[in-house]
Amino acid sequence: MFRFASSRTLASALNASKIAPSARFGAAQQKRNLSIHEYLSADLLRQYGVGVPNGSVAKNAAEAKQVAQSIGNDDMVIKAQVLAGGRGKGTFDNGLKGGVRVIYSPHEAEMFAEQMIGHKLVTKQTGAAGRLCNSVYICERKFARREFYLAILMDRQSQTPVIVSSSQGGMDIETVAKETPDAINTTYIDINVGVTDDMARDIATKLGFSEQCIEDAKDTIQRLYKVFREKDSTQIEINPLSETSDHQVLCMDAKFGFDDNADFRQKEVFEWRDETQEDADEVRAAKSGLNFIKLDGDIGCLVNGAGLAMATMDIIKLNGGQPANFLDVGGGATPAAIQEAFELITSDPKVSAIFVNIFGGIVRCDHIAQGLINTVENLNLKIPIIARLQGTNVEAARELIDKSGMKIFSIDDLQNASEKAVQLSKMVKLARDIDVGVEFSLGI
Image 1 (cartoon, rainbow, N blue to C red):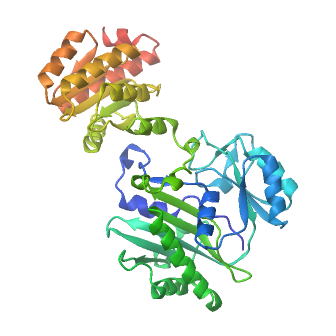
Image 2: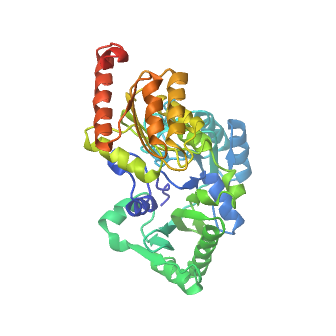
Image 3: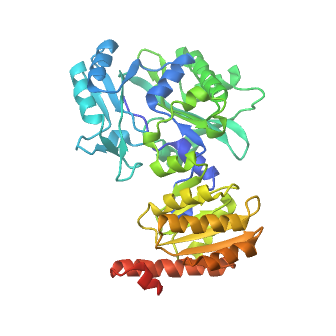
């Protein structure tokens, strides 16, 4: 039976259980890895001698027709290249149902490519905004006698690579993990030894490959680990890994992640990054050296240090507020970085107050204060700003803020500062609801 690959994956679920995100804020965990499109994953697998269905990418309808003709088979699949799960059940903004379709001719390839490329696909993972489809991947449709699941991940608890495999591959791998956990096998890898013949053969046997395919499956598993190791991967997920009706071992779909810290070593891989698939504000922040994740609240946060940023969001929540973002400006909280951070925060129309919580160590508090004052003036900000600065030259910083004439609330105590942020945010939201000016609502 032919099945399309899963969107929300067991690998994601396993990673989520091992990495403690700020999930209590309803935010997605910031991932330290690059994701690439399926067609690039398939090309990479081909370079390592791993079996994949014959196929190629097309960036317009005419190319799609040519690709389908070159495949020379009237039984194919066209897949929208969007970095999100649930493509098969997604809907395009033009009404087309399904980002993964079975096609039977070059004409159909051209027709569906025309309807997919240049349109946004909405899936359960993209949210209502959807993701833009810039290309399609067309490949031959192969029929599987057996379907399996296999992933290679970095396991933080053991600090080693791990192979996660299951005889029950396909779309419902999360259900398998939940309802029949015994069907999931975990194999830990000694990085000094790698995946031995016996280890790979044992995994292939437990998965359920037929005897005539065991050696091919063993080779495939070892080659996948070679990709994982040589390309600084954080995740290789094959779903399904199949034994076809003609006894080929093929990776029907692949999801790759690569360690951002290895970008200096993996320049070719990181040239494959598709920024159109990422949040525009997060891309902008990364270019400025800021760690930024947009959340659903209304109190903007500007903090230096990831731990302090998490604590700041926690205390906002404890006082009845909702953080609008995670934003860590790092140790180099320069005036330019502060202005860029403010522009990112205030680009969200929901933001009704900004809580600045910075410990001045490498960067002096008075420099931070001056950057804050300049930014408020340059951007002509009307929403209230609560500033809690601690550290080097903090007295000079307070004096600068007090003499600035700006409506910046300088508060030393973290609890008092967070209470003030929540209080002012509620006042501004009320003012917006009854359509009066922010200055009036704050009594200024």
